Length: 393
Image 1 (cartoon, rainbow, N blue to C red):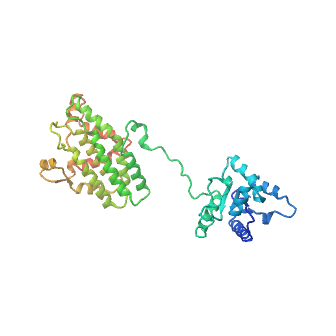
Image 2: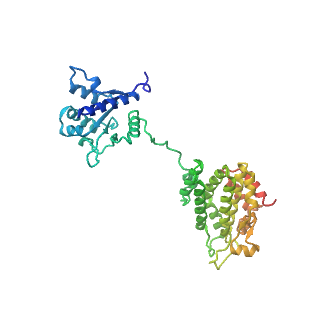
Image 3: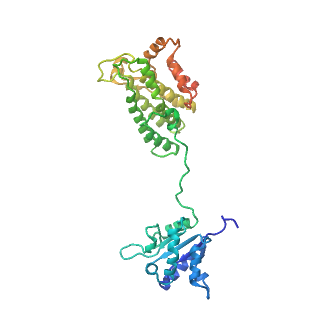
């Protein structure tokens, strides 16, 4: 007989407190046997002429006995603590077994009675170990199931397997500590597990990402080569962008297209102010926001490309057909508070200057950067370029 079909052996230690209690123990032992457990009970297994002490010692110490139950009522505890009677004898055997063995899952106390203050009757030697409470008929069934799980070593709550190391801790992202990582993980988990609050967590993540862009703002009054600062700022945004792409890819696979497009649209709209001069800034340079202009343009392209990748063409078109609200100075420039998706495509003077300064002779450094950064992004560059060509359509 295999270990899977061999019933676990269990010995019950109890006190002959009263005839009613003895009858309860027999019914209890019978219920356990009916549940597939090979119960050893003195009423059934201790015969005339047998040595009672040897029987108890064998039941407690025998490695073939998988589990030992201590049925604890007032009588049992009094005898155990006073080392009197058969229970006292068992206690002298059980105590070293409990405290000297590494495996602590062989013994468990089953409480059947509480004192006048509601405290369970537990022997002193048992200490603070966890017990199973069968003293209340209202919870008997639930706690009996708990006991069965303990006997069969099948706990209700199992430790989950260890997953893979988070991608945001990979080598390419090392050195950049992202304040968005926590809301990002919560949002990803909620989306993947279909949780009701997933959209709220996605909004929370997008809001945090938008706030984090402020850390990439470049000082306008600087002696450093400005196009170097722009490129460095764009590089620092890469791990943030990778998180955003994963969120966008997950969203683009969702079924509630209208709600998803609304969330992504509002996120993109919240980025537009970064391409506009802050109100409190007086000294200004024309290419002062080129890093933000690149970043916002890139995020818009990936948003559209994610929906294209998952063949959600209506959703991709929705990001272009819905106008975007503008900040005050943009409104003055464009003459309207609303504008089409064309606002995301801005001319980057700093990259043109870099092309000339380094004599790179490239047709477009902007396009070169998009191509380089598309590697390992999870989005084909052709999808990215399809999103880009819609600017010109």
